[in-house]
Image 1 (cartoon, one colour):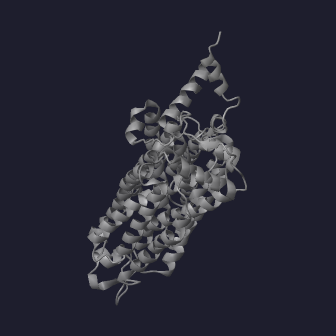
Image 2 (cartoon, one colour; image 1 turned 60 degrees about the horizontal axis):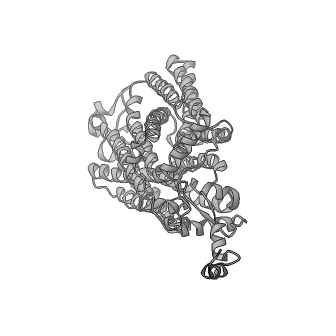
Length: 520
């Protein structure tokens, strides 16, 4: 029998739940991929604008990287006052008996006499630039995952690029030039990976592959534009100024209209800012996020007090996990071999006795069909088969270039083999950015991409040394690299239509559940 006190308590009990309690019970927590698919749109007007503006940074990277082709070129020369002996070299002639056709200011080679016994200094500049890229990729890969964020890191690298790129034009001597190119490389190493992640993270999973492949059109377009700029500005000092100014314009005109990644906001515990951005994306795309829908990390429980926790990750976390450790090792090894072939074949084609400006332009344009074909096949056949297939496609033609001779009609066959080899490897090169980004969660994504980029830069440093082995032997080295890289890709998992995880815990939970489902 109930006491009077119990009856009083029952009377006080509300017949219906309060609106606040009911609303709390009806909160729908979604990860970013689900919210993009269900409410915001995977690639609408907002993503298109953000993607194009962010990817303009890739053209800046092309300017700062490829400017060395023109600035450090060996100009034409001629004899003074008499005919040159057949097969003569200026290394065997008196200094006053020959001169540079376009004057000493046309390139660093002619200004500082980087010929004959000093020719190694050209390669040294290139190697140290890529060494700077390798260091910068690791540093800014970590900073963009942590306190600076994607947009903050992109802003910093563009500032450094503009400062040191323009300062390079005023180098008083060779060694100051080397130091400034190293510092420019340090910042350039962070441009591509930061822009790539920032451009693709707000894109839905079914559109992310094609979007990621399209980023490299901007890099190739930058190379093509640079060839025209270099044709107009023949002085290497003028060229460095003109090719560095776009970084300054990007900072002042473009950066203010670029948004931070909602994924970075989320893992930093800034849920309100992430939701505000998701509402903006939905509104711009003509969509609507219903009331009661909010973002959640893939390891987050429904506890309001835990919403604003900062979730961080580092390279140490990647290495401590057996799952991500093997993925990182494979990504590094494949990036290294691909870079040797890509840059090696590019330099090999550059050695053809043709118009330098036209040759660089055609090389850039030739890569674009590879991007288009790979983008079409990417979401149909998956990342893993294409990573294997494009490398082995390149390998086949590198073997052909190694086997055939270099005289008569076989010289043309070898040239075509080189073009088709770089065609396949160009597809692999940009495909790897998408693949690696999907293999790792948000908290360590840029750190992992930074490591892979560092490995690629090491391959770029070694590529010129492979090219000097001769005409046919480099093709053999490139074939082996393509064969090994394709074989290593067999051990990577497929990521097509798989979610992009936010945390290490979320990835491990999903992989564990998938393993249990397969066992059952």
